[in-house]
Each structure stands twice: as structure tokens, then as C-alpha cells.
Length: 275
Image (tube, rainbow, N blue to C red; front, side, top):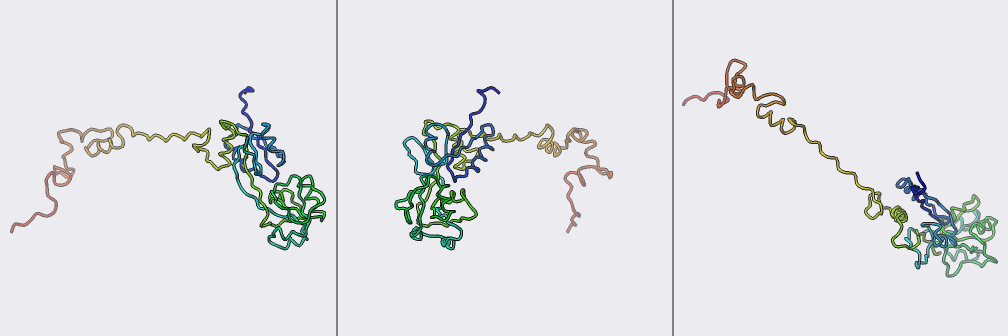
């Protein structure tokens, strides 16, 4: 295989917390000749990666600047508060932002939630990353409100989390640089994310349907022809009852002559008595 024949790889970026495994598996099943490469990129950097052409598409968190990027919203995440397991919040099934009024709530620089007013008590500083804020919570200093996927990503045995019912939510989307037309491989991945089947007519490279199996025609002398021949006294390879004159065909094996019983035209049953 020459260099020009090597298929172009599809480069997919994704922000922390997003799990692209399901879509990657479907891609590998449908396009085994086109490798898919993954790159985890921070929420702050992912849009620059897409604009620079360092990824063909990416899983991002909204909002997206639609000036030069396209996006398909996929799902909305539950927002949770991360606390130590022995914290009072851990005893509740869910909480509100007001329940955190007396807590120091960390607001890392890579926070993905769009707060109008941050709940709780203001922290002295802002941690650089969500991972740094998790370390502070584990040390017993403050709490952290994040999308549930990030709480799972940074799971620790000494921490737990509970839903915050009135907190802002995070929406995950698939985004890619705007182009006309949209590149074929991007169209392929959009179809996978949207759940299109392999034979969908909306795809750029639909798999052609298999031709219907042709019905096998019966051979000469078989089928209807053979059945018709049997009705007319012809076999698959025989003549018409030895001869057309009926010398053998009309002979009764019991010594009589005529048709099947009693010859042609004979009435079946007992003869009538005259009145």
C-alpha cells in the first residue's frame, strides 16, 4: 500500500468527563479501514484545537460560538455537589443551592457551569483545575459543585456527591469547524452520534443494499410442465401411454376394457329398477 492509499485518520477531541467509547466502537465496526484517534482536551482549550484544525470534531460543553463552529446538542448532565463522606450533605438524597449557604464553595478556573451567583461563601482563591478543587474538598476544606460526569471522573473513596436541584446544568455537544461541504468523515461521525443506521440514505457513504436473490427457474420437464404432462398422460421421460391409438392405455388389467372403472361413460353405482 502506498502512502497515498493510506486512509486518513479521524481525529476526535473530547473534554474531561465525556465518555466517547460507545461512538468509537460503532466507528470501528463501520469504518475499520479508517483509524480514529482520541485526544482529551480541557474545556478551555478544546475550541482552539478545533479552530486550528488539530481535530476533525470534538465533544464539548455548550455554549459554542457558532460564528465558525457547528454543534449538535446531545444531552444535559445532572449537577452535583462533591463533599466528604462524613459531611452533613451526604445524609440527604438531594440538596438546593440554599443548603450550601454556609459552605465554602470552590470555583475552579475550568468550571463549566454558568453561574449567575455562586452559592455559599466566597473562597480566598480559585483553584486552577477541577482536580485541584477535589483535593481541597478531600482535605476537608469547602465543597465543589460540578457536572456529575466530572464527579465520577475524579472519584475518591473518601468523597461522595449529591444532586443540586436548582444549580445550572452542563450540556454536552458534538462540535466541528464549519465547512461547505461538511467533510465526509465528519458526516460519518455525525450519523453515528445521531443514531443513523448503516444503510441510512442521509449518510455520505451509504452501504448499498444487497440484490434480491433471483428465483431459480424450474428445469425443463419439471414444475408446471411436468405436472401438465402428468395430467395428459406424459411422464418426465415417457410417451403418451405407449401409443396414441390407446391399444395399451385402454386395457383393463382384470380383463375388461375401457377407462378407469367400467370404461368411458359408464355410470357408477347399482342399476335402476324399472317401475
